[in-house]
Length: 200
Image 1 (cartoon, rainbow, N blue to C red):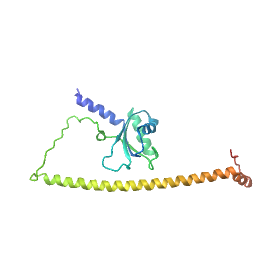
Image 2 (tube, rainbow, N blue to C red; image 1 turned 120 degrees about the horizontal axis):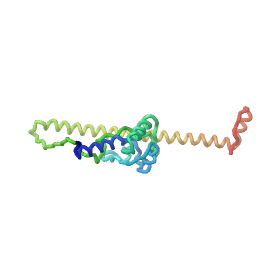
Image 3 (cartoon, helix red, strand yellow; image 1 turned 120 degrees about the vertical axis):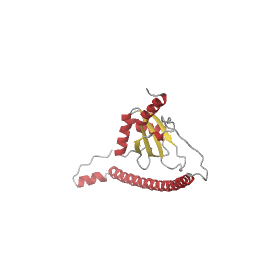
Image 4 (spheres, one colour; image 1 turned 60 degrees about the vertical axis):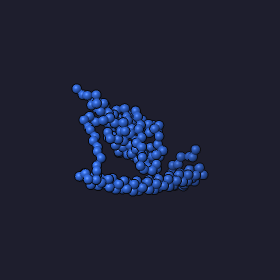
């Protein structure tokens, strides 16, 4: 017979299995936008943004999308992993993966797990280990900041490249429209005995 604590954790794990972790999401995306984007895979039950407390606001966001069933969540992961999926015009496609329990802020306590802590004095045998861990954490923070800076630069470069490509395509379509409107395309089609639908 499962205890109430174990039953609550099992129910939480079911929720985890039907939740998708979405990364590389534009900061401009809102809950209605995300719901509209992922409702095509099924019913979205809940959208939870993962706050970015340390990095700049321009960084891509992450979000947990809880679907109605586990099959719907797997459909999202499978589709987004195989095909580019854009949300709210972010320069690069979003990424999707299965959610993990430690991603949830409101996760219940795991049955049987206990957390112990204590202050360490300089004369403690573990003091040097704790100091090395502290230095390592600072090193990881610096490396993370450097990588985030590079990520922002690449995203800005990609956004500029896509904007230029969009402008180029627009100019091409304008030129084609003008050729059809002026009748030049029809004249060229008549000259080379080709079919050309009349411009309307």
